[in-house]
Amino acid sequence: MMLSQGKVPEHFWLKWEERGQYSDESGQWVADPETLPIFAGVCPSRVNEEQKIPFELIIRKMVAYEPRERAIVAELVKHMVTG
Image (tube, rainbow, N blue to C red; front, side, top):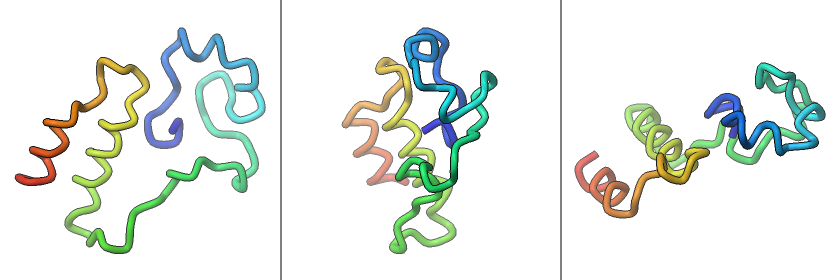
């Protein structure tokens, strides 16, 4: 998630004991590319070029670090229906 969302909030960052294995203190990914998270660069083949940015935005809302910042189901459904 750090590749797309950036460094985790400080209160999570300080609790993550293994963070030095994956990133530097600024949140930059430093681990072997083979250890990249499964979401890194993933976009379904059914999503065309025009849909990639809205698709990424909705995924970002779904996986926000802070629960209060995550999209609720109604927001996601509205986004899917109206684009």
